[in-house]
Image (cartoon, rainbow, N blue to C red; front, top):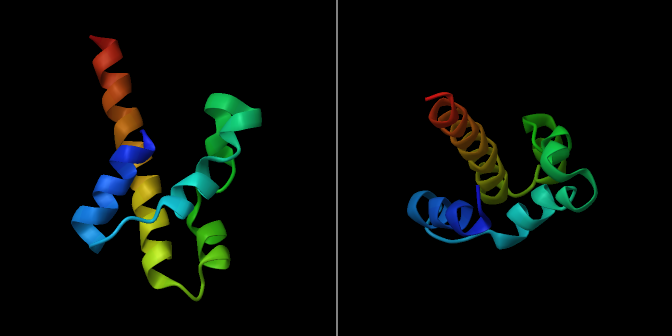
Length: 80
């Protein structure tokens, strides 16, 4: 999912965008490519990073959910 879409979800559900959260979460893409989700895409890592910022934590959790849903839709689409 593109950052623009993640930020739209933030705006709709949280009232503002958290660009820094999405940039941080997807930064490993530069060296891991499509496998980047093995890093920074789990609730424990997000809780450690954003333990004192519930809005950013929620944005990160929404990022994970959106990525998972987007991947499932893409896989289903490619199956047909």
